[in-house]
Each structure stands twice: as structure tokens, then as C-alpha cells.
Length: 187
Image (cartoon, rainbow, N blue to C red):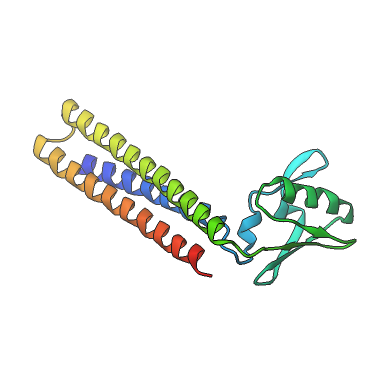
């Protein structure tokens, strides 16, 4: 059953990539505590090139509600300040001559619910991606059966495995969403 194993292995790999992408996406979701991942999407205009913030400055979590950004070149402070404001993260950086301080404001109940809604929406998008992977795998199995690469019985068994793999991926997405929801709603 080499063909079937290849299809399942390929599907498993794609689902794992989707899960890893979702985990990385969730790290950037604001929870009311300082996390360097909040600033992952921030791009600074570095001599005309949009550059990730962590490539032009040293980032540190000073305490639970404060991130400090120490640029390698002092003339970048205004650009860093502007980039953080423009990133639309709801953050209000404060800069002085050496450093940019990014206080993390406490989340209101309404804002927490809004964030949970966004997380659930992202989860649904990832579930859709997993279902698309299932569709692709199913089409490969059906094409293999039509071409004679796999018998009808093996095709049915493989499709059952494809469904099982898909269900597992969707379950993991639900678990990640539930964990993030709990983290966001915890005051």
C-alpha cells in the first residue's frame, strides 16, 4: 500500500504545517500581558526598506505590562515609534533618547470578547484549510483508483484514514482555540 501511505503521509505533513502556522498566529494575539510576539508583525522603515523590528533593535519584556525596544541606531527611535503606532495593535509607545517603551494596557471585558471572536474566526479559517487538504487527498486517492494505482478496497480504507487524520487536525485546532480563549479571558 505504498500509494495510500504516501497520500496519508502527505496529508499528515500538510495538516501539521497548518497547525504550526496557527500556533504561530496565536502567539501574536494580545492577551493583556507583555509578549515579544505582539511586535512580530511590526515593520520599521530602515533606509527605505520595511524591516522586522527585531532586526533593528533589541526587544525585552521589562515586566508583565511593559516591552522595551532598544534600537541599534538611535536615529531609528522615531521610525520605531511610528511603526508600532501604525501597526494598529492598540499600543501607544513612549520614546526617549535611548529607548522606546511599549506599555501593554489592561484589556477591557469588551476587548477580550472581541479578541476571542477574532481567535475563533482564525480557527475556522484553519479548519477550512484542513478540510481543503482533505479534499486534495481524497481527489488523489480517487485519481489513483481510476488509474489503477490502488484497489477499490484500499481506496476506501485510505479515505477512512484521510477522514480520521482530518478529524484529528480539526480537534487540535479546537483545542488551541479553547486554550487561547481561556488565556485571553483570564484577568
